[in-house]
Amino acid sequence: MSMIASDNGGQAIEKLENGVYTAVSSAIIDLGLQRNEQFGKTQRRFMMIWNILGEDVEINGEKQPRTISKEYSFSLNEKSTLRKDLQAWRGKSFSEEELQGFNILAVLNKACQLQIILEEKNNKRYNNIAGIMSLPKGSSVQTLDDTYYFDMEDAETWENFIKIPNWIQEKIKKAENLESTGFDKYIKEYDEIMKEQQGKQEENTTSNDTDIVAPADDLPF
Image 1 (cartoon, helix red, strand yellow):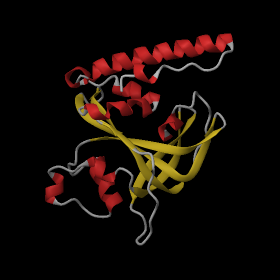
Image 2 (cartoon, rainbow, N blue to C red; image 1 turned 135 degrees about the vertical axis):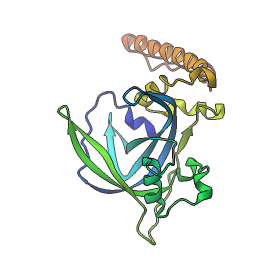
Image 3 (cartoon, rainbow, N blue to C red; image 1 turned 45 degrees about the horizontal axis):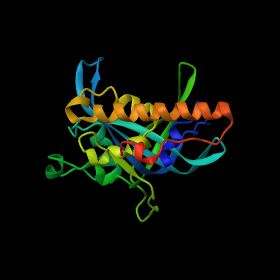
Image 4 (tube, one colour; image 1 turned 90 degrees about the vertical axis):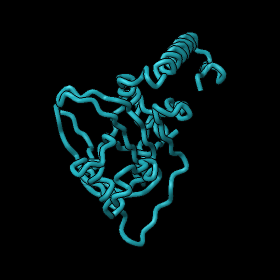
């Protein structure tokens, strides 16, 4: 489950230096309808996550792939960031037909180059994606074995919610279309099971017994 790398329990991870890195998109996560108070509008948004090849991180003694993410709206208008990034990634402009409806899943598990910069804000250092480029002509990269996507409007993908990093899960819970999609009921059941499981694990830690996990049949997926 590669995406667990983003939930590191507060463990400090050394940031990448400025540079261009080869990456493969490992997850596409629908964030639902998100309200932007600054601009006073609501948009359906999603998160793209990439695995950066050759840049593993160690979390709790376990090596996991380093990931980086970027948030987008679903808009392909001329000024949208998504359109600019996808055209640079694919190395070509969109056709008029594609602009009428492009399936974002077409770029899942596809390789690209990411220009990553190191920035500092409020005395904290962050890695951000400054640009996306296609691979050099003639080059190839092996695809990933473990990719996933989550679509709030497709119940068949809800089982992937458990793979989503916690900070993105919390963002999804603020979506304005939770009730209209029925995902609010799923989240309620999911949170209750996770809370129960955490309580059992804490009780187990106190008693110094082996780890206790919720039976698979109890999970809502």
